[in-house]
Image (cartoon, rainbow, N blue to C red):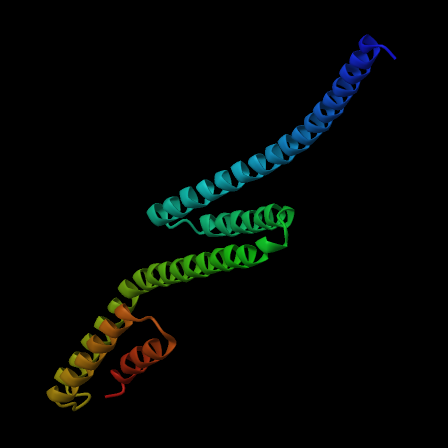
Length: 195
């Protein structure tokens, strides 16, 4: 075997190894790029969904539209499913992160729903207050007229106490529209004509 043939065999084997390594690297890089593109697309979709959630929340805060709550709930559910898909593509070490992200998303949903429920309760209270105030004023006027006309003898102190009780319970109702507060206010209003 001549030097020329040995050199050709060595060059050919180095060239073959270089081609094999290059093909393996190209295939590996293609796989990595495909996976990276999938994760980037999913991450972009999650960021877009999160921006939508923030926009819906801001719109709800300004308009108090009830359909925004349903829209936000559906967007949160979509975000939850996208997070689950993204984190399932990760290795097992991402399970703790997945649980934390889902827990934070659940916490956000719970706090937003609590906020929207309190907002709805305040709107309900605002719509009921004028009607209840008119009803209270009418009952007080009827009671005063019956007392003046002599149909009933109710001490002024008792009337003042009952009206004060109604006002105090009304203020409590403004601060906390809980069922026990509402019941106390309604019983105070109902007790006024019974004097």
